[in-house]
Length: 471
Image 1 (cartoon, rainbow, N blue to C red):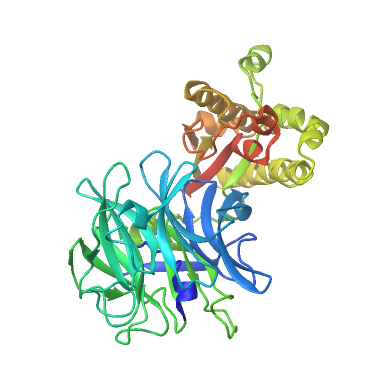
Image 2 (spheres, rainbow, N blue to C red):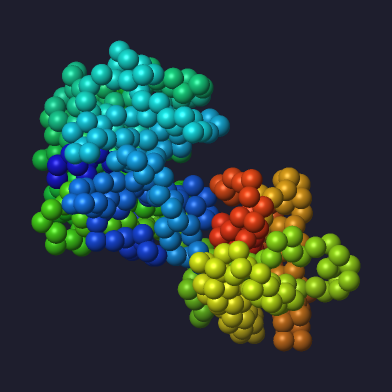
């Protein structure tokens, strides 16, 4: 594989011994005939990835935003379209992130700091350190209160090929002099995709080295910190004879990576790398899955959507047992209004997401009821969300009311068949009203978009995230 695809490698991971790993192709419309890489999930509903595509027979790339809609990841929009861009890495600094940009044929690549609408090349931030032609794959992390940026470069002072380097970053986003990761990480071959896992104090990367390699680029890990690393270990559970790259964790046990393992393409620079999802099952996790005759995973996560500012306090005052069915019917009756302002999306949303998920909710409740009859105890975890049209206090409040309406629906479903199980506590609900705290969407100046836009429609919801069943 040449540097064309190597440009955008990004990685993060940790693997414990004696684990079981479930790997599957990413569900949704993200993967295509070209390559998709560097999938970075930032919250329950939003992620970014790098997409390759052809334009007038030229290979190009762009950072693309994705939304999780009913368990499927769907492309939303491209960013930085005027450049061959990729490798978005976020920081805790307000509005600051880092990316890679390359020229039309990828012979020159450099790192850039993005601060709101301002984008600045590293060779302007630190003219002494970034004058070479190839710097890419930024990955931000923190160690002992100090901020670092890991990246890949073929600059002088390395061990050959592409090496992993580190620079210290201050709170303004300024970049220090690069430091090589050292010989326990870098070899005469190519080391790419650096990511430091702060939970386990481990560096993860990919390499095409000859020793302890299954073929192509394999994923490796090394415990330590800049610039003291232990021996690198091959993560054999994930590697094949082809290329495994862009290994990222969303949380402790779930994440993503890219691979061309299923590809028959001859030109790997422009096609065939897909994004895969993985879940690590450890002994303590496996104990959470109790022997039940019912499988809830096919329904989860299940999102149930609400109209703007609904339900309101007056709804509950007028009808104390106001429930989600009433809210759903009121929302569905407003289809014409949404279709007027968002005709490209309203039809699909109202039919597939709003109506389809309400029907799935009823199917799920019937299964829960049968499970309870069979003597199982059930715990349901529910989160509430709101779009960013008001202050956080209001959004937390309306998120709580949305959860309350769903709980009322559970209690009144089919003349209250579940109510006895709430009373004897064999059916329990864990509530998490989050308001807008996990929404990455920014409020716009367009009131219509803030109410009828697809992102606002998707953020006004309650999600059933997890169901535990046990005896």
